[in-house]
Length: 358
Image (cartoon, rainbow, N blue to C red; front, side, top):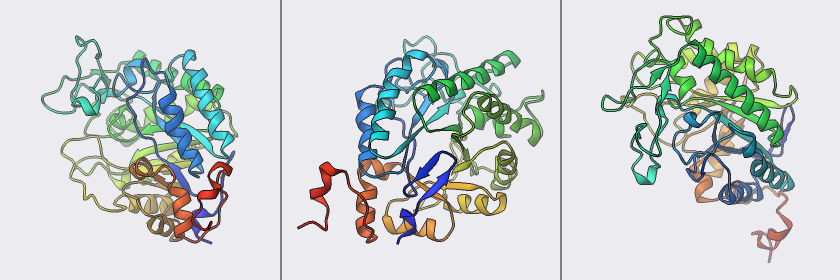
């Protein structure tokens, strides 16, 4: 049997295969509310055979959104539609999680198909952004407001409250978004953290914000439910966060009760030079898995069943998270099982379409 379709248990998650729908921003919310787009988008991937579906980044506060179209989980009114989505996914035999996020200085942007420009507070769809330090993403953009101690405490409270709502909405796991240049990443990186207080300077200080967030979330997130963290394993910039830093961080995260590390990279600097190619980030999942002795997820241009199966079979990662390939093919796991000669259960409504059927 192909190892891609071997089961894996992570706390409450009894995954039927190793295929996960990676968080993908849809920019289709109003005031943070999920709607029928999200129900169909996420639900179709559950029908398609994924073991675990993770929603797009769900902002823990309005100012934590990447754009005004982002999904939110900052108020109780968001729960009802999210619960409808989690119920449907569960009915299809899959698990569902959500990614809790704060975009920091990369917040307040136009939707990608409308240009992705930074929107200032004087725009009806914009607001003032915050960050670890008052450093703009590019030289031509408006600088964020550096979070003071009260601001840091508020963000921690926002993540904590969001975790409570995620549990009430029926999510099976949560992932803290510490990658791609968003707020947590901004505190971790020496490129964007120039603070002189206990949250800046040394490695210990720059990682303090994330560790305190994890502590806050653990106070309310059920102990039987899984907690993932996504990191940028390297920034691909001289003088920035490195793979060595990631290994050191993950060793600490393991002691904090983090169950899996979602190993991405980049996103914190326009100066990054990324050698993009098939599976270009898998090496980080492999290294972190082996050196920190933790479960890892591999992401980044994983597009074929053979490639995904090899990653699992070779012990490079424990899960493969697909994004764009799932946009192209919501039923990737059904097709992958056919290509790898694995017999899996199809939805009854689709059974007559199996390739083995005459």
